[in-house]
Amino acid sequence: MIHVRTSVDRPDPVLVKELGRFSAATIHEAQGRIGALDSRLKPVDPDMEFCGPAYTVVCAPRDNIMLQVAIAYAAAGDVVVASAGEYTEAGSFGDVLANACLAKGLGGLLTDSGVRDTRELKALGFPVFSRSICIKGTVKETVGPMNVPVIVGGAEIRPGDVVRGDADGVVVVRRESLADVVQAAKEREDAEARYIAEYHAGRTVLEVSRLREVLAAKGLVIGP
Image (cartoon, rainbow, N blue to C red):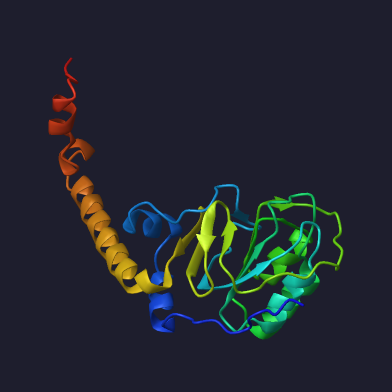
């Protein structure tokens, strides 16, 4: 018998919303260039994005029974994170399950397997990130753990950690680090705004980033 957890220690929703103001790339850089998932995990539509607590589930390859269990028990705002062994030759999620997610107000789906019905998914607007698009069907046979740490896209994701996905990719933020990462992302975004203002004021990228000294120390000579 396998006993699965349905409850998750979720982070402060105010902090989750704050984190969602920043891009996945900004968050990755702000937290010390960690937490980025494999670049092959992309949204079905570039306009799709999510930011929410992870509701994790382990699925057998080409089997979506546990994915359906996770969808049934996840709460509004949760991002269902499915680890399915990076098996890409299966369409484990489509428009029918997307409607189930929308009806519950879930925040999104992240799977290292494949999905299908992409035209319908784009029309529905429910954020779906996957490793592949595949029409091949799945079975409903193998039960497994839920709300345990999983590895998706080469990164460990724990229940309640925050996952942020946008057109460029996905990043995970540890629940206990959320407040610090939000602050670091704010500081990085403010710094980038200053850089842009200085560019438009006539300073070069080398001046703004103080790269002349760095280049000179590396022996680079710039001249006509």
